[in-house]
Length: 115
Image 1 (cartoon, rainbow, N blue to C red):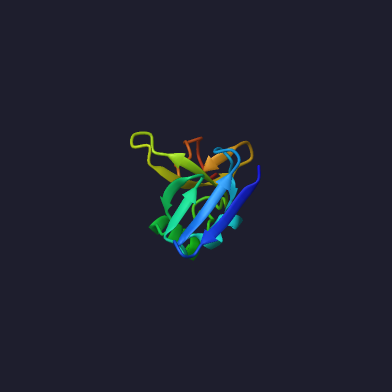
Image 2: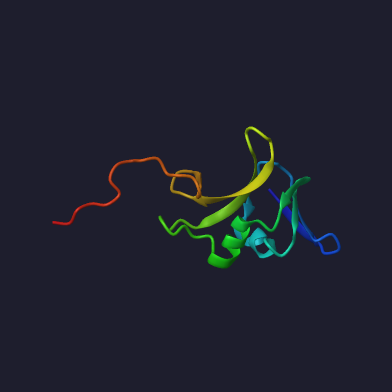
């Protein structure tokens, strides 16, 4: 799906438009605009473009310090209760896209003992 990103410097806004609201936006396309503009309009929905989380992505990178997964795409999501829009970062795991900031379910021991 095509993604269009353009800046409106007079309004301090970045506009992100996709054909499908469920389309993922590659992180390397959106990351340069985070924290440089106060607002992100993602398919018509206003999002704070200067959040602490975005600042962390820009300053520290998009690689998880715990598991080493690298965030590859952003997607527009909505809070279940308030319906407030936000952008979340996902990493590609072997079988599916996984939100890189949610706890991975316990699947047994993570470390094996060396004998």
